[in-house]
Amino acid sequence: MCATCGCSGTGTRVSGEKHHHDHGGHGHGDEGHGDEGHGHGHAEAVATVPSRLIELEQDVLAKNDLLAAGNRDWFTERGILALNLMSSPGAGKTTLLERTIRDVGAELGISVIEGDQETLLDAERIEATGARAVQINTGGGCHLDAEMLQRGLRVLQPPDRSVVMVENVGNLVCPALFDLGERMKVVIISVTEGADKPLKYPQMFRGGGLMVINKVDLVPYVDFDVARCMDYARQVNPGLEVLEVSATRGDGLEAWYSWLRTQRDATRPDTA
Amino acid sequence: MHELSITESVIATVSEHAGDAPVLVLTLEIGALSGVVPDSVRFCFELCAQGTPCQDARLDIIDTPGRARCRDCATDEIELPDAIALCPCGSANLEITGGQQLKIKHLEIGN
Image (cartoon, rainbow over the protein chains, first blue to last red):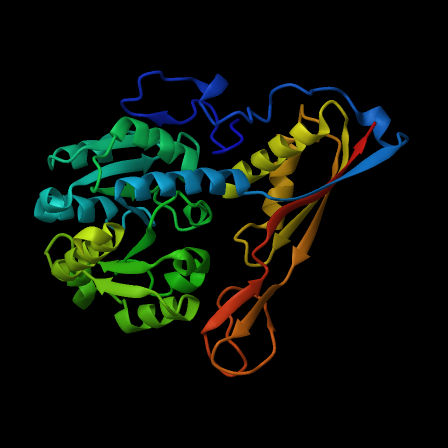
């Protein structure tokens, strides 16, 4: 089992990566795997041996945060806007991306890193719109981490001053903890979910810079109180921006595109 | 279940420091607002420690409560039982000041 991503069995796979490694060493830096070596029987020693205290005071996520900082520098040097899109499965991340790429993909220079446990389906959907996409399959893993993104970027090779959309694994819990080096986290929620999601998954909504409420064309048919959802979200994160869109019907997308342009301009200050 | 990858990462780090010595006690600090569930870490630890220097270690977890300062009133730092609590003044505009830690504090190893 892998120490960084927690995947089991077949491990993480990046589509288009030239040297595919199996689980024996799929490239998580030099810390190796937790199940390698040191397998002695210590039971008899525990009760009697003199012991030594090692003070560590080390952040558990320090390794990931360091790699994320590296990714962030990499984006900054190239004037690339990177956004980390997160939601529960089925909220419409891929549909929003497809529509966004068709409408403003060429203008903004959008390419995509897709995270899913299995299949190349989402990357294929993105490539059908004409944009470049790299699929990361996490195997058993429930989130993308900074190292996986780094590997994905090596394959994607996004041009300078472009936009990289990272579609995280559909999950409102685990991806919240792992900084990827993105400029901002975008949380997508759809009106077919409960309006109380921000209270149920506060970690996710606390870390986001923007909440996109998707499928608003369905509001007349479902029991979803948009204002209440916004209240809950701002209770967790007072500074959260909110946009209401329908990725299929087009409602509110102009506001989303202008938000993207603002972020892009902030990433490339000389073109603002 | 990010606790699985987090626990694996903890064990990898601890194993580097322990070398060939057995880990007797491992102490973690998990804040109430860290997004990590101590019970899940305990569960994963039993599974993941097998075959590592941690396999017979006792796992101690220090639960640090969440703390915050209100940006809207002059109340002293308050304790936050969870991430969605309010200040007694009713404000949600809180600056979190504690409880987000996720740390390996120390380990005790045999010789």
